[in-house]
Image (cartoon, helix red, strand yellow):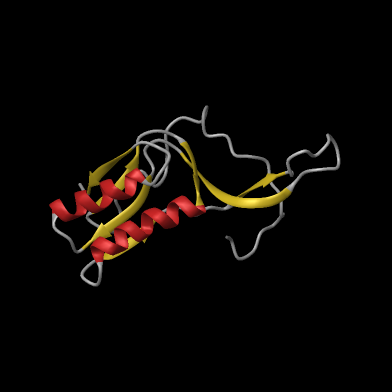
Length: 135
């Protein structure tokens, strides 16, 4: 959850018609990265779940960078609620991910270990991903 928001409720971000990522599309900090190959929404819970899988592999030998942050609130109205009455309360936060964006980066592991950790983290996300290596 963000520490401070300008507004409590926002419009939902659209990543379907925006094309590929123009920033954050290369491995900058570590030697290996998890790159999105499709666009979509990733919730804060999904990012945390993937981060835990990576942290389990990295332990104290390596370092992890999270390159995305869930800034956008998603609101929902209760079930069986009639039309009207305004927008619902914020329920969760999401990050809108474009294809080509680097989501996680790691360093301090061998290539085999890094591929294993990042591929397991990719299973936790609702978008297709691949392992990227620093050029």
